[in-house]
Length: 252
Image (tube, rainbow, N blue to C red; front, side):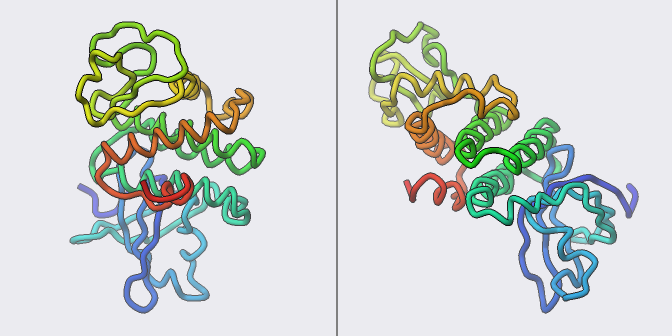
């Protein structure tokens, strides 16, 4: 195995190390998480500082280390500066990188995740502010699907029966989707949601990120969908996502 390797990656998070270094967490283009040391990145004249900021896509050259790899070269592919310069965009983009930080794993590939993430940030940078919530919800439901938790939204996750239309629908966290009253039974992970929420999530699952804003989903339904997704994610992903909690309106 070569001691030096190249990878294109999205910067997710940085942590101070010593007096002038940073530990940077990246999502590599194959979906694996990579943690590497950027030596001297906190110095004023560092050649790495701005290139490893969260939301930045970079071409990296890395040297393998005993515990953490070392960044030896970094060239910007997309800075996404507009995300850092606007509070609404930064809040939405922070949900994206926080989610990726928690679900990505070293040496566990999911190549679709990198494309989804970089495309989402590209779209967020240019989107109307009122479309950002829809983009966050679309990213989260697609991301969970890629993580192995695609919610069942069109028929009962227990018995596959069609769900009759009404004002509300039952959604089981443990079963991973909508359920009929019989299958819900004594399932304590079941919550009641607006009957329109599964339709919203299903529409977002099937939409290209660039087309999400054009769906014109009412903000009320987006808020309800985000609340359901926060509960769904917290049930299946054991680590707290602070950016999602803040964006969704508080701790569950």
